[in-house]
Amino acid sequence: ARQGDAFRLRYGMFPVQAMEWLREHRDGGRLLAHFNQGSYALWRGFPDFTVAVDGRYETVYPDQTVDAARLAFSVDRPDHQEALRAIAPDYILACRESALRAYERGFGTEWRLIYDDPDCRIFAKTLNADGLVGGPECGILTGRRALIDRLRRNPLAHVVRPGKLTYAGLEAV
Image: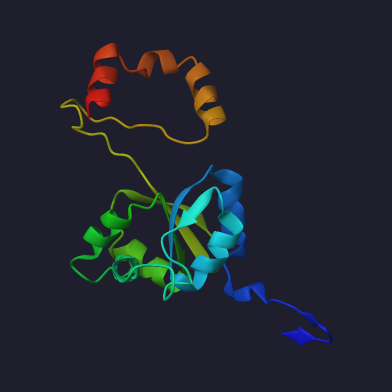
């Protein structure tokens, strides 16, 4: 909106709170956002966060990238998971309507809701290491180094720490 000689941007349509939370609580990564929110996400997240596609989709991105990003949000399509794997995001930023539809039907069990506000939801890719090295159920912690170091110093960490064989198996994968 223009007021006098100044322009004023209305932030209501942008994922302002979600991107501030993501910047504050995560170190960076690849972000899948609908191209309507992708430009704002790129502006607020760069250089730590990169986006799969943004409003420059007609001039910057190859058609196959734009098609894969659209398809990744089309949870009713059978090839939606394949598109999601091709983009390989660490996080998905979704507006309320698509987030509800996707969470109920379809990003998949490897995605966990990590942020929720009246306008947006953010999902994070989780690591499932079950059967990765032919062993029992297990999980892999990822995140900020300071938090991982705090967990490492916890007395219970000695009880659940992996052995040399586990580390060797993970390195081989």
